[in-house]
Length: 308
Image (cartoon, rainbow, N blue to C red; front, side):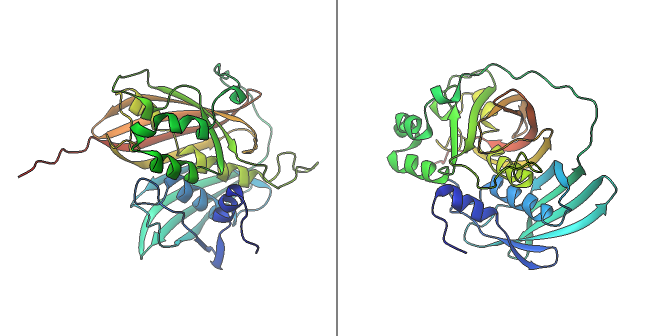
């Protein structure tokens, strides 16, 4: 296999797992940024990719439910073991355990379904500006270099997100000066480049499983922003909270492509006990509700060190 040339190529290579044995796959890890652990969206996307490798081609993921059990070590590969729970007439269920250093770090259950017709309705897409009118990350982040701890931190974040064109509709939480805001957030996102799975008459959306895994990867980037906004906190990027994803659930409603603009509309209904809950809806640019997301995250205020 040739070496990945672009950031998107590298991301796709990260999701292209090595098959070790029947139902066992190995995934590479990316470099840690800001926090010394593997990015949760990567683990979830790789686990879902592993599950999909064992499912008939006529079935697409419609839901996943997962728990982050331990921090992932960015210096070691992750082994994914797939348990073939059920293969029914219409639905297929898989359970995946991600293991590092002999212990589980992540657990996922996913369900896949054959395409069929049924009742149709959805919520309307909320208003949002055209993504092409919004600043790119490379244009936005340097404005907050001092708040983020310097240009080196800005460069780290930009390198970590090179494969994704992610644009904030409003100011992100790290721009906050301590003033609480309405606990809602919107971002537009798409992969930074086209995914080379050519649509055809039998696959108008390309490889749906690949695009679902790419959306799963991105879904963990900003979902807890709305929790931080409610309290005027800038987040782990500025060090005024310590946080991590605890669990993550997604429902995939309609076909989409991750290399076309998607609106991620996010809100937080509550936070307490060191945990914050966030909900998200992902819409295609033409207004179709494609994905629903719910996540609970660990969000703690760092203890101040007392000098002796």
